Length: 168
Image (cartoon, rainbow, N blue to C red; front, side, top):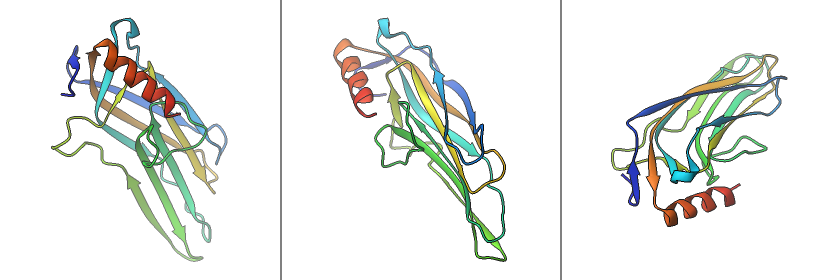
């Protein structure tokens, strides 16, 4: 368990999803965690499973479905290089004219046994992003986040909230 945090729940599973409303157009869903800021409550993320849609197979055209889960709202799908992104999922098809080859990149759904947690959500929500590329159908991503609620002391809570807000 991270220092300075006291668990206030057992394991919690949070389901999420977001879908494009127009093909190949960025979409985002903000998921309310219903944390209690008056009690300095945070959510300690232990694992995330993401399942993005398979992209369309279109001969001669590369297609993809990109998704990310972040601690703050974003205007684009993020990457693991972004400090506010906890997980990514990408499926893509590379087409050379006659045949396509599918690929998948999904960040680890659970941390190494040496890690105590993947991240901490200190504000009241998290964001899920999706965007397809060169598809004719709508893309979506569904998944689950696993973790537990914890209470932080005032100084740690303030630092976590400030760090999260400044990462946007």
